[in-house]
Length: 390
Image (cartoon, rainbow, N blue to C red):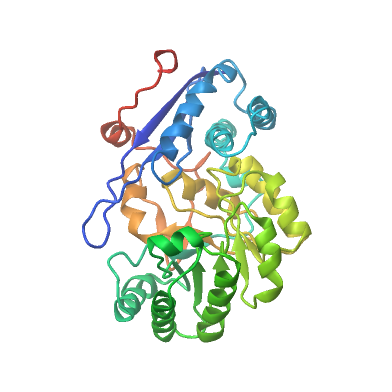
């Protein structure tokens, strides 16, 4: 079997916020065709702004290295693509390109073997994949509104874990990594209201988006942990600074989760060796696809660190992540956005099986889903690529 063509689609999923405003967001799907009529699909979505566009451009730029290759030679092709860019640093966009293509190659290989990807990865450890809920609080401003949404949206769907980002910074504090006392108090009140609503055993996860300096991160993380027993404090300091993590780590009682902006297993070596995280959460569309995510998860297992992928984008990100998570002994939970479920399903011929705070995969071959190509083409955004790449 040989690869005959690779196409990319930048789509606008038209996601609305709770107030009815459109959220600027694009997803990028990759289609890999073969001479045996088997087509594989991958995703290389990246946020914000035009991250998906840049990765889509990179996929087309890598097409010449893939046409005529055997798509089931996943590891050799992963290494070939990754090594093409090491002279300029094969992370960031380059890693996103490898990720998107890798997911599509696993889809092809599963279809060729007539097995779901999780069987090719060693078989399932569980029947369902536990989720945590994100994207459930659009339009919420007050503690009471957050509490009501946690009850009416998160608990009503059977979830036992949720995540939110209640820490608001004005422009001046965003530049310095600080937060005003009023904003810190407001965040504390929001989380306390949610805790009272969901009860003592529900996981509340807080995302700091890597926005804080060292003393602010320590103060906020410990406060929310002591007051409301949050389950983790995610990316408390900028992702590029392991030095800052080393400073805050011994000062914080709250568990720390990091990894959505790290690329490949090489970025995680110091995290593990220096004991800088309690949970890791790499992104399958950025860290290297299914192939590399499995290696990162295996490394984490050796340190007994739970693996909980970041998953804030499109349909195939959650599906490919779930295929991997089915097989991992050290899996914790997979992220999903409750506000994007309709958009996930929009690009699939059959809706995903979300239930009771879980997702259950089909036993169909490959990624187990069929793409709604008509909808992908209908919502595709016209990109101005160089003529040679179109």
